[in-house]
Structures are given as C-alpha cells and as structure tokens.
Amino acid sequence: MDKSNKFLNFIKKLGKGVWEYLKQAKTEYIIIVIALAVDLISKGIIQSTMKEGETIVLIPNFLEFYFTYNKAAAFSFDFGLGGLIGQDGVMTVFIITTIISVLIFGFILYKLRFRRLFARVCFALIIGGALGNLYDRIAFSMVRDFIRIVYFGLEIPYLGTSFAVFNIADACLVVGAIAFVVYMLFMEGKDSKELADQKQEESSVNADQTTEQSEEKQAELASQNNDDNVEITEKVDNVSDISVQNGEQA
Image (cartoon, rainbow, N blue to C red; front, top):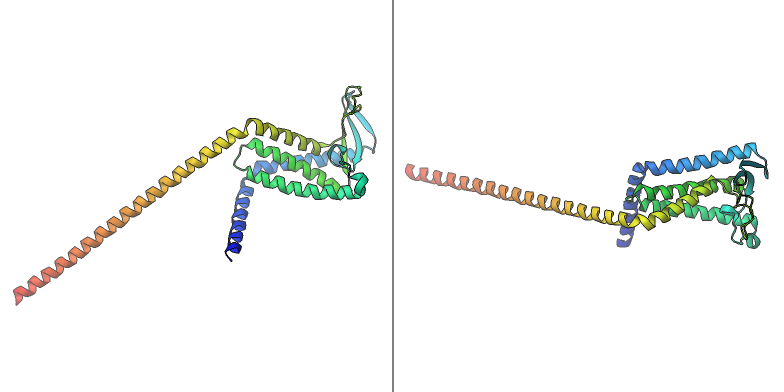
C-alpha cells in the first residue's frame, strides 16, 4: 500500500508539474508549430507543383529542388534494414522509433524548463522536425524530400556529386542537434551554476521565512500566555476583593 501511494503521489506531482509547464511554455510551442507548419506546407507545395524526379535549379552547381520520395530515415539512410525486413518493415520501425523519440525529446524539453531559452529552442526544433517526418511516414508510408545541395559540379569520393536529398524537417533536426551540442559545450556549465545559485537563494529565502514564521508564532504564543496570565491575575484579584468584602460584612 505504501509503495502504491508513493507511486500515485509521484504521478500526481509529475502531472501537476507538467501541466504547470505546459501553461507557460509558449515559446517552445511556437517553435514546434512553426517548424511543423513550414515543413508540411513546403512539402505540399513541392508535391503539387513538381513531378517525382523533376529538378528545379535555384543556384547553379550549388542548390536545387529535386522532388523524390524517401522510404528510409533522414537523408535516405536505412542503416541496412531494407535488406533484412523490407521497405514496409523499415517504415514501421521508423514510425515506432520516431514516436518514442518524440516522447523522449518532450521529456528532455520538460527537464530543461529552468534552463535558458536557447536549450529549449534546440529541442523544440528537433521535436518539430521529427513530427513533420512522422506525419509523412504515417500518411504516405514515405517521406517527401526536395532539397539537394550540389558540390559545385565536383565529384567527391564516397560522397558523389551532391549531398543526400532532404527536407525542412531534416534541417530542423540537424540544426537543433548541432545547436544543442553548442549549448552543452559553451553554455550548460553557466546554466548549471546559475540554477544551483538560484536554488540556494530560494532555500535561504525559505529558511528565513520559516524562521520569521517561527518567531511570529513564538511571539503570538508569548502574547497569548501574557494575556492568560493577566486574565488569571485579574480573576485572583477579583476573588480576593470578594473575600475581603465578605469579611468586612461579617
């Protein structure tokens, strides 16, 4: 019973904390929604205006739109799973993996709620990108890719003539991950120190408040005891006066 009560109390406390966080995490919501919206809108425009395999050159020998459907993970990687479980199996694995990843990233985002905005934006970008590709995998059983970077007309060994075709969601994932690495290298230490100082300050304030409340309670009790003593003294005096009066009458 004790373990059950502790678990229920933990769930209630966690739920309350998450709800309080969700009510004030407006910036993270905005980043996630913007990333998801830009990704899906751009994919929709490309899908409706280009045929699969069609190319539109934006910057010669550098940037172009090349519309294709990707049945693997980001940047067309399938980690060798295609030959083992087939394309349908790969897509199922990636859907399950993406859902689990979004839940994990969401939990990390919640844990970072007291850290600076930069850290929270990193994971908001990652979540927004993951949701964009998750939608494609569920809706189309593949991901719509259309951005291709060409190596200025050169052919690089093992890399070919261009980088793997990707989309806005993939870009959000990569930018968010790289930005978080930067945060961990250059900002996390300062954040941890500030958070520790803040907790120490809050503890000091709470201790001072507790001391003040204790002193006030002691003063109140002392005042009440004084009032009681005065009341008792007055009653004793009244009894003495009555005794004296009765003695005089006798």
